[in-house]
Amino acid sequence: MEKNIFKIPSLANVQAETSLSLQLKNELQISLPILINSLLVCADPNLSAQLSNVLKGVKHLLLKTEHKITFVNTEVNIILLVFCGDENTTATDIEKCALKNIPTILIGDNIPALIMRKAVQYHIKDIVPLTPFNDEIGPVLITLVNEISVNMKMAPVVSIINGKGGSGASFITDCLGQICAQKSDDKIVLFDGDFQHGSLADILGVEPQYYLSDALKEVEKLDALSIQSMMCSNNNLSLLPVKPYSHLSDSVQINIPELSLLMNKIRSNFQLVIADFSRGLDHYSLPIIDISEIIFVVVQQNIVSIREAKALITYMRARLGIEPQRIHLIINRFSKKQNTLSINDIKDAIGIKSAFIIHNNYELASACTDLGKRIGQVHDAKQIKTDIGKIVVDLMPISLKKGKHSSGFWSRFMGN
Ligand SMILES: Nc1ncnc2c1ncn2[C@@H]1O[C@H](COP(=O)(O)OP(=O)(O)O)[C@@H](O)[C@H]1O
Ligand SMILES: [Mg+2]
Image (tube, rainbow, N blue to C red):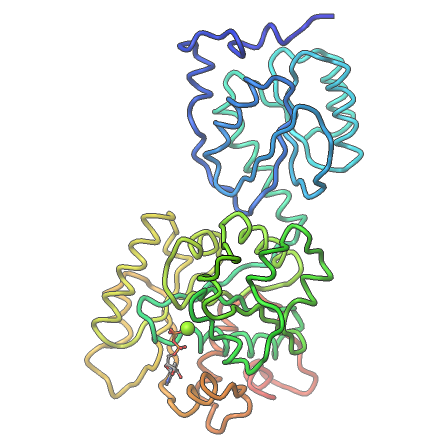
C-alpha cells in the first residue's frame, strides 16, 4: 500500500523554507457568520500543529484537535479529517463521521482512489489539498458554514447601540421587544448586553432567578429545553437578564467563545434576538454586533450625541467592516420644536441614509424604564407606539400576525 504520508511535503522533515511550510505558517484571515465548533482529526502531530496555526486566524471557529476520532464532544459542527497515509483508518473515520451526521471536509494530498470513492459515497462535503491549503480552505469553510447556518435556522440578531449613555437604547429595546411580541407569534428574546448595569429586568418588571452569568457557567450543557426554561418569559417575549456587577465577581469570567456559543444556542431556539448594547462597544459586544443583521444606533437631536454616534459608526465600519446598509439611526426624544437640527441634517452629518424617529415622551419612558410598566399600560402611548410600529413594519425580521377584523395594515398593527 502506498503510504501517502511520505508525499505530504514538509510535515516532520520539512525544511523551514519550503513553500508548504511557508503557506501553513500564515493565519487565515476570514470570518464565519456564526460560531462553529470544529474538530481537526490528524494523526500527524506536526501537521496538526501547522493546520491549527492556519485555522487560528478564522474568526468564530472554535477548533479542537484529536489524533483519532473519539466523539467525546457531540457538539461538533464540522470535522476536518486529515488523510495522513493510513487508508483503513481514514476509510473508517469517514464512515464514523457520516454515522454521526456531522459535515466533514477531507484534507490531504494524493488521496487514493479508494478513499475518494468512500468520500463520495458518504457525502463528504469537500476535499481540500494541503498544497495550497490556505487558498482552498477559506471558501470551502464559508460555503459549508453558510449551509449549516441555514439548516440550523439561526434567529437573526438586531443590535441596539448608543453612542452615548442615556440615549434611550434600553427603553427602545424594551419597546421593540414588546411590540414585536404583540404583533407576531415568533419567539423573541431580549439579550441584555450591558454587563455592568443590566437594566432590562427592571424595565420589564421581572424578578429573575437565573442570569447570563449562570448560563455562561454551564453553556456547554445547555440543551433546547434548558435554554427556553432559563429565561424570564411573558408569552413569546423572553429575557436573559444580567446580574448587576456580576462581571466583577471572581467566579464569573465572561469569555468570548462561551458567550458566542451561548448566543448560537439562543439563536437556534428563538426566532429573533434583540440585543441591548447601551454601554456602547466593548470587547464582548463586538462579536455579536459583527453577526447582527440590523444595527440600530440611537442618537439624540444634539451635537454631542451626533458626534459620538458618528465616531461609533466610523469605528464599527473600520474595525468590523460593517456595510452602511446594515446600520440605521434611531433619533430618540425627537421634537419638531427643536428645528435647528432636522432629520436630514442628522443623516448627513453621520453619513447614514436610513433614520427613524421616536418622539419625546418623558412620562411614558420613565413609567416604562423606572416603574417597569408595559407600553400598553401607559396613558398617551399612541405616538410612541406609532414610531416603534414603523420600525417594526419597515425593518424587523419577524412574521406579523394576520388580524381577523382589521381592514388596513396600520389598524391591525396599532390595535391591542
Ligand atoms: N423617547 C423618550 N422620551 C423621553 N424620555 C426618554 C425617551 N427614551 C428614553 N428616555 C429616558 O431616558 C433615560 C435613559 O434611557 P435608557 O433607555 O436607560 O438609555 P440607555 O440605555 O441608552 O443608557 C431613561 O430615564 C428613559 O426613561
Ligand atoms: Mg441601558
